[in-house]
Every structure is written in structure tokens, then in C-alpha cells.
Image (cartoon, rainbow, N blue to C red; front, side, top):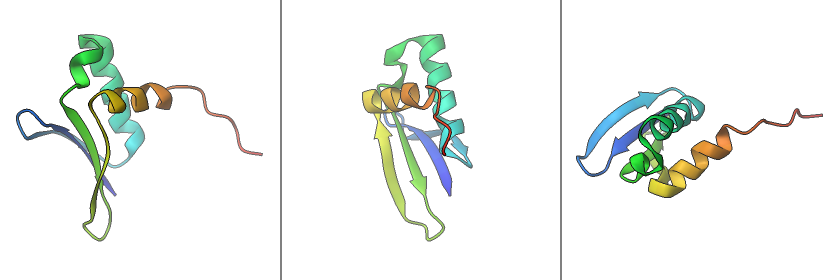
Length: 77
């Protein structure tokens, strides 16, 4: 799986990652450094092993996903 963060205004890839968690960490860092609106033009997608690309989140929804990802996770079991 390959996760790519795109700037939709310039149509440029910002970065790519092996996992979603690292991508969302970069999004959180950008928002902390530059403000919540820094993600307005960002989109995160994932490409699976068959080359199929799926949008995960864009803009405000991406920022919210990044914030949710930073919350403590419950242990299974």
C-alpha cells in the first residue's frame, strides 16, 4: 500500500508514505505549524497492490481525520 498526500491546487504530490498513520502525522504537523486551513487543498489517497487508487479524505475532512488519529487508542482485549 502506498499513501500519497497531494496538493490539489498545484496538482503536486507533497509526500508519500508506507502507512496512513505517518501521512496523518504530517497533516497534523502542518496544521499545528501553519494553522487549520493549511489542509484546505490537501488530499490523501491510497494505492493498493493492484494499482487501484482510492481517496481517503480531502480538505477539512482530512484535518478531522488527522486529529482523530492522534487520540489515544484503546487496547484490544
